[in-house]
Length: 69
Image 1 (spheres, rainbow, N blue to C red):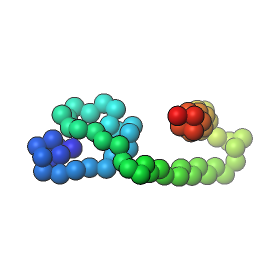
Image 2 (image 1 turned 90 degrees about the vertical axis):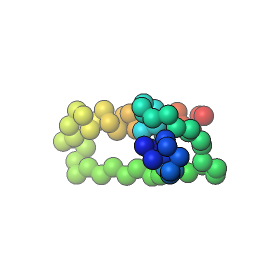
Image 3 (image 1 turned 60 degrees about the vertical axis):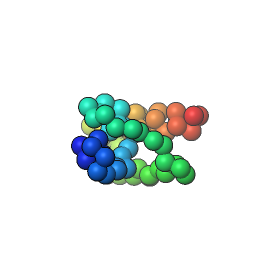
């Protein structure tokens, strides 16, 4: 991002990273837009930690919001 800021490069970064950056750079959407698939595997759902359960809930909610946008 530092190189992009001084005009010596470009970057392809996820939206989440671009939310709170201290750099003075121009952010443009990609055309066509791109996405990635997130895969989560657990050995036993009953043995998941509370943090993992919250993370999975967050991912599901985020995916639902993106589909409605």
